[in-house]
Length: 353
Image: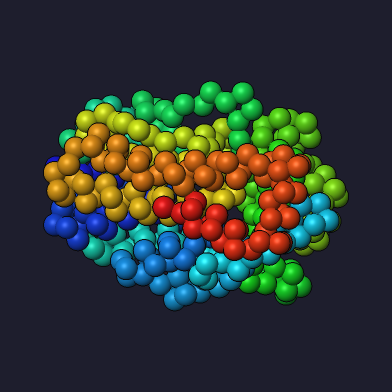
């Protein structure tokens, strides 16, 4: 049997596209028959947009919002820098749907099943068992039993996401920016998406959420304490759902793997999204794994090579994130961005794969 790709997000779909176009017959397995809107993602950098165009997907044609600037908010301070090249705001529903459709059109077979466990050469699903000598694991931030990632942090990071419906006044506030609102213990990234909605994606320490109890209560407290964030949250009705994911191992890189198991996306490297971009790692790893398999390179060989590529951007993004979640560090980053925007652009380039 040909390679099995577990997970039809950006990493898995990119691998399936490259495999199919290279002459293989990959099986792409996903747990959702209807493409949903994953919690993480929503911003595509210039490098990611170019990689998508090369395989035949144009973010602009999907209605993506053009993003030209980065703006940092720390307390009352604000600083902006022009991106090295324009990026895009695009929902995961739109992006994942386009990539999955392209994978099938390229020759990949799509199957719907929820993986319960992975063993060498075997995926145990709810519907049936799937066997192949090659498994490409692209399960995103969710671990599958049998192939866990380390989660030893004393105060792990959590992810929250709130989608605010389209509003002309909110759109005027955000404009063509991706905004990063920094506060002790976490941050909120805000960008407009193709339907005019605003995606508010947050990474924060578990201790911060524990201090305030419910996620929505924490959001309301932060909105009251940080005026710029509060101005955006004013458009978020009290009944809007807050999606969450726990214990995200930011900074982790898979430096080896078992024979036959290629790790992709967040299963290969988890970059802090404050400064880095998970979409870039997802697409790059999917493409690299497919090319490695087509050339006959082993999974451990691919994994070590990709770990070397991912190490620098993950390390750089981790340093920036570590500064940003401290009050003094956040103020320093904002001041540097205000007075030396070229440094901010250099940091953006350094943290992309």
